[in-house]
Length: 326
Ligand code: FE2
Image (cartoon, rainbow, N blue to C red; front, top):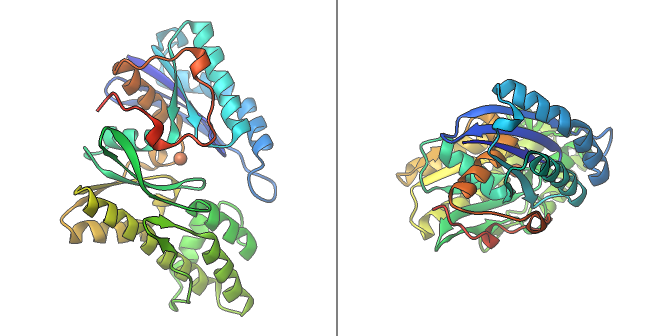
């Protein structure tokens, strides 16, 4: 079986093609880059509508398959930005109807976990999903994927991007912050915001900007933000692993490219006799291959959807999905 998946929850529009053994035959993506400020949902949606058809063409060429060879078509139904979701859903519906193929709307967060399980040695992990729009600790428990902890305000990547803008070091600032943090030595006082199993990041950004206004160096600010936020993520992940007695941690989302975050989670895993798994970079970020694979897994388990059941859901919760494939 061959599946095509379209991703478009936020800044990235992606089209991926996978086969039944989770081989990634194609994984094309194009990212919306705002001229100034953050993501404007309507402009991001316009971007997706411009690039989605060329991406479909590019992906089929890269995979060496004809559209007629595709068995299942899936798309990210949510969570995400409404205009972006609707644009990608429309493209997926049009493609599925014109080809007469089954269509499945999939949960974006679950897709990060499914592709990680398919493409690493992880079997039943706790997923630390850290990206721009989402920050969640997810695992399979009691018949569903459950959220064990999550951000109460903004995603960690979103916070790093905003901080980068305020500090004048550019947008999509994560890599620059990581580089600057290597030169930091002083751990500045920032609010360690773990509330129960949940996290909050906006107060940390405000405190970091206060340090900036007082003349602290960019290096020390970036170092302190990373140490504080990543310790919070690692703590919540560890507590989830301890609570449900799992010995695998899987990383997903754009922020897990950060080497300091990986090192902290890896140390935690080693100290509890657990293992850390990280998919290849192009499968960690938002991408079409993970959507294609999740659609294929769902289809294989007998999940079917009428077009009328594929309405997008900006707040699509991980634990709403009935998991028939585990
Ligand atoms: Fe994502």
